[in-house]
Length: 221
Image (cartoon, rainbow, N blue to C red; front, side, top):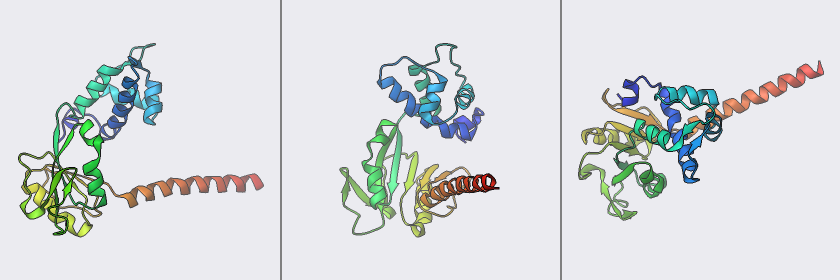
């Protein structure tokens, strides 16, 4: 279980912490020493009351009339997210998405260090991405412990990849492949499904259209 959960920080709050950190980092780069909960909320896309409630779980409270110390709060959020150390990452699946993630400089700046790349395709194995060789999944060698495994393969290959990652001692998996992975209880899996996210967006769009339609009917009557 994650440290935040042991401390009683709600999962929903944990999900908003990266947004707060991104906003704080931008403000810090401007050389500003403090930020109000209202501005932090605007930059993170939430309500100010939500910001204050979330940060209270971290034991951080702003000063009335001053706000939050940007540097101190950023350090606190980073520590809560475990970003005070580098996390070794392996990416499996060197299609367009996998290559894009391997090339994404934002991973390194946020505490994640890609240590290995792998694929099952013989035509891909042996190629290099960002200077790193693509290894065969069956012979995947990471050179040490891996904290996070990222799966960017087609869905039919995802379970095999998950099994290999678990065998390497990985306890945190991020998968972009549709479907549910079967993993041991002590392995955390986060699934990113573009279709699901689009369906959530269309749900809200549909609700807005229904509300507008109902208001127009009421206006006519």
